[in-house]
Length: 114
Length: 110
Image 1: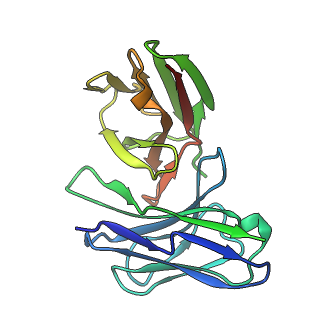
Image 2: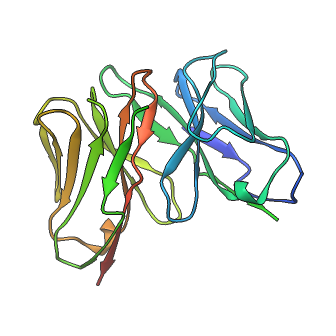
């Protein structure tokens, strides 16, 4: 099993450009998340999807949009990138056996906006 | 909304010393999870605690869940350089959304 796969791993954007971060999981989990992590900081939730067809805003949703395309895929879009969006982005899915709903993270996307 | 706080934010220890990080939630938690993130890596699940007062051990790591289910701690005995990383606690909010604490970054001097 690949677990959670994120693409791309690295990206440099110019201010105002747009891009979509892709995330796919092969564990048949219902819940998927997008977090951002700034240097030396914790994980801040951008958006959350409890199941296919539903999405909810997290702590820092401004400047982002998401799509839960199907149960496997949850993409994050930056419509007009800003330097403040320079960060490491992690996608995660959550599930497991009854009672332990652990989160599985992708390898991260290191995004720099210049 | 629910807030999960961790202290300290950073901790430098000499190899062989003990280390403890504390996690506090603004609301009662149904369970609490702990994750470790190595430098340059992604968070990896360590353990979940569910019961009030629960204590679990993984080799040199001891995890506790408070009686009121609002706080938790992770204690590492005799740290090693392989323990370096950031330790996060996380708890589900009322909507079952996982909320992470700010993390404690552990640095170990050999």
